[in-house]
Length: 379
Image 1: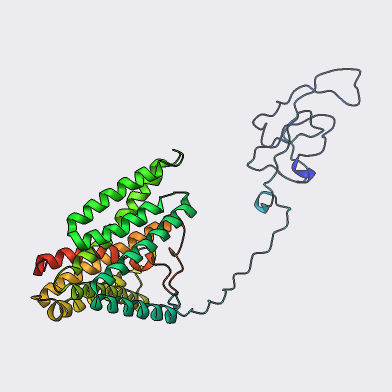
Image 2 (image 1 turned 180 degrees about the horizontal axis):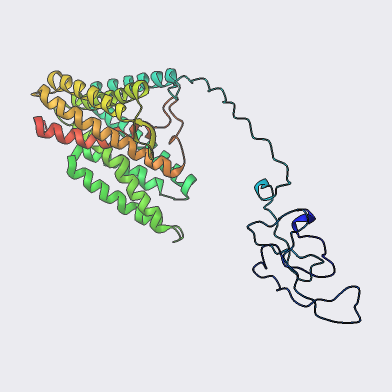
């Protein structure tokens, strides 16, 4: 701010009022001292309104201008830094360029995983499962038990690494394997008894360590016992029927077909997010693909694989599998998002860990077991 904004130069030895009258907060005009006759004090008449030198410099900020040195502690208002609209003498800054930037080139949609490795691992696992399933039932029960133990190890390891939760692995692994065997030998009753004993073992095992964190550790342990081995027990229970291997094969085929349909249709046509806060990659179009593929496969499987099954039962079964598989996938996505990880493990190239393959299978197993019992009996 230059000096001209402060007021006009002195007018013949007196202070005159500003051109627009006294500003708010300024001292009123009154008797002054003549600078040329300081020894004879006398009142001076009030000066008439005289135009200030250089024209009216007041603005709407209400600053009073005096025709001489200031006698107050008032400081002149200053314009905001860098705002030329409040300071008529500040230079105008050049306007930024408004030339549009070139649009980025469209990116090719990616599958997000190594499809070659994923397909190879999937085919290998399928061969092992089918071979054990139709050769000796007990061998397939052992495959389920191994998958359960590895899944429990992955889950408890991630809980400890990411959240500091120490769910006891030893009682979970032993109880989980026993749970699968009990379900195969004794059915649902054996599975429930083994589940209760496993939960009790978790509570007792954790007592050997300091009490800090006991509640969260045992809660996570009981959750892990239900989530992995107890749900997997229904696969072993399917196996006990006369057509047990074909029931298990139907269960596996429908779950895989549901996941494949969701992946294929969602990757190609997916635009509308299904649950963006949980799993941003899943779309409504993918869910439609899962339902369509699973219902078609269900009709074929019930008609040609299951004794006394009909195609319309397969449609219902396929719809239920698509729903439970999607919910199971979203459930594990919620767990992984809470833990801040992408995959539960790295044992299966192109897939992640064992738990990343069991996520849709585990909640689907009791659904398929129950519907098959209702449709064609326990066998």
